[in-house]
Structure formats: C-alpha cells, structure tokens
Image (cartoon, rainbow, N blue to C red; front, top):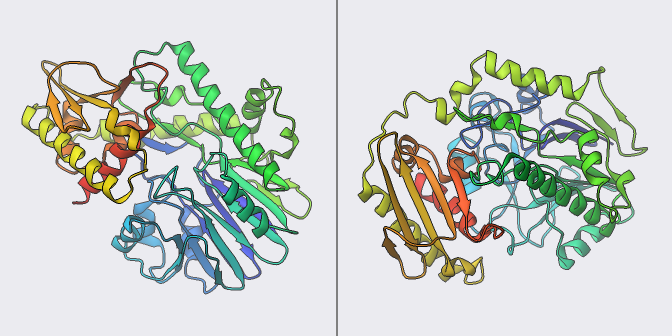
Amino acid sequence: MKVSLINHSSLLFKFDKTSILTDFWSDTPAFGSWLPSAPPIYHPMYLASLSYQKDFIFCVSHAHDDHIDNKLLKNYFNKEMKIILAKFPSPSLKKRMQKLGFRNFYEIENDKILRINGFECMTIFDTSVSNDDCGIAFRDNEYCVYHGNDNHFILSEKNKNRLKDFAKHRKFLFCSQTNSASGYPISYYELSPKEIKDELEKKVLKMVKNGLTNTKNCDADYFFPYAGYSKTYVKGQNYHQMNIDPIYKNLCSIAEKDPEINNLDKMVNIFCGGTINLKNGVVSYPFDYDPEILINLQDKYIINNDSTYQCDTFNKNFNNHKIDSLKVDHYLKEFSSFVSSYLKKFPNFYNTILDKILCIEVKSKNQSVQRYLDIKNNKIFEEGKFNKKFIIPSNLFNALYDKKIPFDNLYTGYEAQVTRYPKNTYNRDIIMYLIMFGYKYKNS
C-alpha cells in the first residue's frame, strides 16, 4: 500500500486495483490569487487519463478552489468517473461538480460507512467547526488513510473514537493541513513584519501540534503533513514571499520550539512527488531534487510566464473603479439577511456573530466609502466602532457585487486589507458567514 503526494492536498493511492485521486489542483488560481508553490509531480494529463480507467475514483472533500481545479476537471477528466463526496447540509459541492458536467456521485452520509469497489470510507464531520467541510477516511482489510485536508482542529471525542475504531488493527496514515490558509496575519495591515512572521509560526505550530495530537489519540502510525503548498499573488504586494513553505525542515524547526511536542518522529518527512510505503514507512521519490530549490524556481516560473495575469488583481477586465454607496449598503443588507436566515436553520452555528459589528470600506485612488453593519439589528451607519474591518479596492468590490468573484477571494485570497478590534480576537464567526454568504450571493 503506497500513498503519493501529488501536490498541496492531492493524494494518489490504490486499494487492490482501484486508484483514488483526492482534491486535485494544478494551475487554476484559487481564491483569485493562489497558485501552487509546487506543481503536480505528474503532468495533469496523466492524471486525467486515469479517470478513463474502469477502476478509478475521484474524491473531493469540499468546494474550495484549491481542492477543485475547475478548468482541468471540466475540460479533460472523464464525466462518467466515479466521484466520492460527503453529503453536506448544503448541496453546493455536488452542484458545483454537476456544473462541470459530472453525474456519477457516491455520497457518504454522516455517521455511515460507504462500501465501494472492495473498500470502505466514511466522513469525519464536525458541525461545530464547519457545515461544508470534512475529513474522509478510507480502509481495506490492512490499511487506513485519513484525508483530513483542511481539518486541522483537534478531533471531538466522538470523532476520535469513530476514526480510531474505523482504523483498528490497520496500518494507519493520518493526513492534515500544516500551513496557514486564511488572510490572517498576512493581509492584516496593522501588524508589523515581525508580528506577521511570529503569528504565521504560531499558526503552523498549532496545526502541526494538533496533527500529532490527533495521530496519537487515534493510534495512527504516521502523521502526514500537507495542504499547504501554495503562494499568493496580489498586485503591488509581496505576499508570495511572506508565506512559510511547509517543507519538513521548516515544520520541524517550528515544532521543536514547543517542549510539549514529544512525538515528532511520527511526522513523515515527505515533499510533493514523494510516496510513502505504509507497510514500512519508507518514503521514496522517482528522482532526487531539493524542495527549497523547486519552490523558488516555481515562484520564478510563475512570474516569468505571466501566470499571475490569471489572478484577480492583475485582471484587466476588473476595471470599474466607480464607488456606489448604495451597492455597499445593499451587499451588507443581503449579508445581514443571510445570517438571520441561516441561524434560523442552525441556531448554534457561530451565533456569537449577532454581537458583532462589521465594517467595509470601499476605496479607490480618489474616494472611499465606509459602512458599519450592526448584524443583530440589521442597521447600517457611517461611523463608529467595529469588530472586523475590510478595506476593499473599488474595482474588486464591483467585481464582488456583480457576482464575478466570491468574498472568499478578498479574505482567503488576501485581496482586501483587514483589521480587527480587539486586536487579539479572531472573529471566526464573521469570517465563516462572510465566506458562506459570498458563495451563495455569487451563485444566486
């Protein structure tokens, strides 16, 4: 049983004769600004060709752009291939795949096991964290692979026991994210370069620590760090030089600063293109290369080949810089209505948002409009205090309002500048709802 890291959070492995490819992403910008910092070890056409084989399954964990390469999937992958996905409360992931032309779905219901092609899989779903993302575990009689992708949080007691029981008596590979994947801290304009560096290291340390803790709690044999190989390209910013590259050496350097971590030997020393043999833990590569050199060359390649011109802030079609305050008011009112409607269905889902004030400032070279939203009372005013503030370039706000980009591009894609008050309060509730609403609004 061998598991290959194609790149980012894309795995390729086999159960008997069935090849399974997860969350493939190659060269289509994610969140309007992300591009892979390490390209796929195989050319995308090799992977697309696998989809025409009888014993092939594609698994997609959730609907983020760095897990679904729309362009490649739509144009080259077999529309009849089997697709495994979770049955979420919202059908947005399935609808997205259907828009791309796919129709052969195998949905995993929460708390149930799906049997397919001689192996089994189940979801690890925590609705206190997200209603549209989950980990997916696969097993046969000898091996278990947990594809946690972006779910780097400590598992709940229930999910820990479910996963531990699912993997029982098998060689067990536990995979989860080990790099920052949100606007914080890089796009938070009040932070100094040192504060940004320190905060990035804290985030990475927490993810590595959580991964190792989950590995220990589930009795897994290996912790597999991934889902962090990307760089962000925003015009006029050097964000692509600020990311931490999540190679093994860097992860160890950060983790070794925490005396509480005592099972670092469980973390697999692997880079994109590597393959781990689960029987003995040996990692191999088709040829030798240096991860740091490869990442630096990929960055140079992206810039020299104008790949950044696919990204939002370089997009010459986003050229409407006019500011209309009525549009800002309308977007905020729609957002407030969405929050109210969503909380009626899921009253305990980040309901702390009702106590928050959101501020949006839309800015051009010569003008700016600032609006504050009292979310609970659905009231908009022009000045006051806030919990979270976004400064959005006017051309990108117009692209947002015209449903050309989702709000996620502004935050996760670092295309807006952000601040918060108090400084040490994350306000995950505001971010979760802005991102959920952003996709719903764009697709409406």
